Length: 171
Image (cartoon, rainbow, N blue to C red; front, side):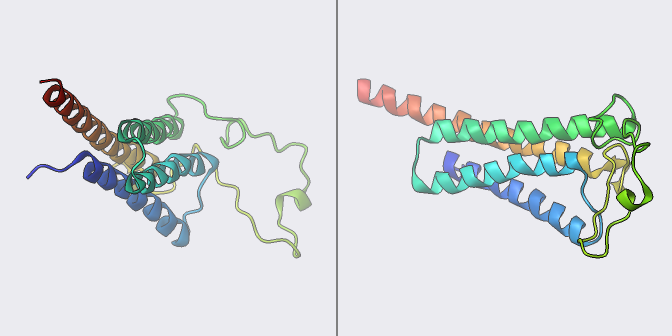
């Protein structure tokens, strides 16, 4: 049984939805996201929106390439984040413990006030959760690469079908 490009695109968009839902479940379980964790979510939202657009019937080849681009983007951020967590390279100074300068902050600045909602400062260079020696960022990168492969497979199938129909009309 062969899946259509649209079906493959919807499966890929569904994969992004599952990864995004998993991120929210971890957050609800008490694993507050860092800035780079949040960055990894945006391309998943875009991929889900692209999946919805596939249902409307917009140009499929363009949508499938955009979906692959979104999946590769979140995978790239996940790989970069993994490198920051492992100390392979430095991350953004705004969310890495090594580059954060708190010398000018007072004790009141570091503690949430009674009138404001509590906030948690989460460092991007600290691994909050691991499974099989891979962090959440690593798992996101790995699964996002799989999802990107599905988007590319959908694109290749759509292109092959397009060329096939062009050759039939030319004869």
